[in-house]
Amino acid sequence: MSHPAEPPPVKLVASLFSPSSSLLDEVVEALPAFFGPIERLSPPFMFDRTTYYAREMGWPLYRRFVSFRDLVPPDRLAEIKIETNALEERYLMGGKRRVNIDPGYVALERLVLATGKNYVHRIYLSRGIYADLTLVFSKGSFSSLPWTYPDYTATDIVGYFNQVRADYMGQLRGESGS
Image 1 (cartoon, rainbow, N blue to C red):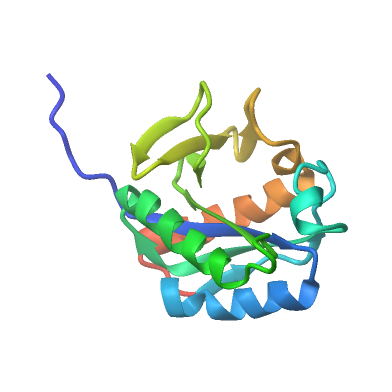
Image 2 (cartoon, one colour):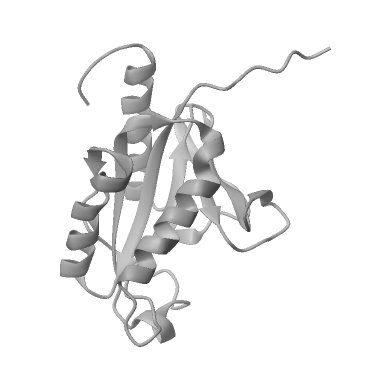
C-alpha cells in the first residue's frame, strides 16, 4: 500500500513572449512583486517556431524565460496561472494580448507548464487550468516528449532548463547561490 506524502516544493518558472522587447522587459521587472525575486533570466530568444499567436499579438515575437528564487508547492500551479492571466489582462490593447505569460515549474524529474487548453496528455488541476508535462529529465538532461512544443526542444532552451534544475538541486541541498 502506498502512503501519501507531500512532494517537495518546486522551482517556479515562466515563459514570456511579446511583440515588444521593451514591454517584455517591463513585465519581467513586474514579476517579482507577484512571485518573489528572479533567480535566473534567460537571454532573449526569438519566438519563431510557430505563427499561432501572430494574428492576435503581431510579429515578430520576442521571448524570455525566468525562474524564481522562492520555491512553491506544486499544487499552487493553477492559482499561479490565474494570477499570470490577470497580469496579461493589464497589458491588453484593443482586447488583444500584448504579452503571453506561461508559468510552470521545474521538479527533479520534469518541467510542467500550466495551460487553459485541454488535450489528451494534459491533466486537469482546477479552475479551468491543466498541467502540461513538457520535458522529462533523463540521462543527465531534459528531453522532449511526442507532444512537446517544438521551441522547448531547442538546445539552448533545454540548456536553460538544465541550469534551472541545477539551481533547484542546490536549493534542495541547502546550497546558496546559482
